[in-house]
Length: 280
Picture 1 (cartoon, rainbow, N blue to C red):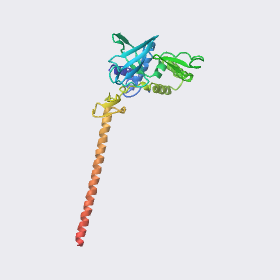
Picture 2: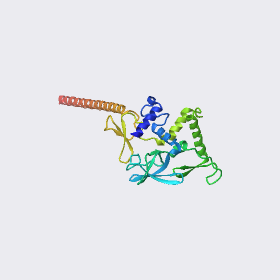
Picture 3: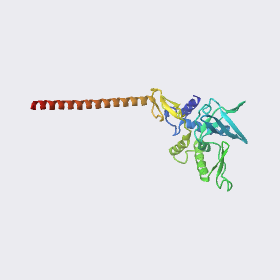
Picture 4: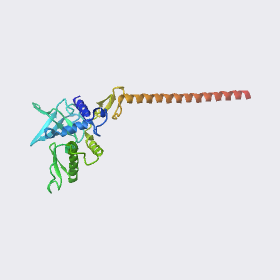
């Protein structure tokens, strides 16, 4: 519920009524923008690598300075329950932790993509000279593991970061067309979308037995789908009702035609029988 309220507040700040439920803001979902904002908080956030999930409890491993850290997510967080399905390749961002007799506990957990961390996190180091990682490459510490970016990849990320800083810092529009740049950013942030955020009115997201999202209509609770809805539950129910009406009409027309054919056949058979009797 807290996460949902946070997403709604960002949605209002970025357009309010101009961004109806189920629609994105500038091409990116409100939940992805919330996560991007958390990443941009900088060094105050702790980045960890989650492992486990399913039948095993989730463990978060990272580094603070020279210290290796192992945390467990608080039971009230999205990673703290049982049977958690961890999406592959995601990192975990936490803003607060608490030490107890059971060890370090992350009080909040937000799954983020490594690419978003590269784009929105602390600035990348300067490209290295010819050495262990090759000329122009950049070594980045992501949650305690060193990721080496090739020269071209590091250059592309640096260009996107520069355009973001120009747009956010009031330095004018990005060098690309504004809509084009927003579309690129929406695509880059899309792995951080969550299934329950930004749903059209009247839908609830729940998990099936495998942990996959399933969307249930609050207007007609007997209706559930695995495909993310794009219209309100009321509209979906009206369309389904109209479809049922069309099917009923089609069935009635088909039955009437069948009855007419049977009647015509019976009439023809009776006339043939009368003609045969007259000839006798």
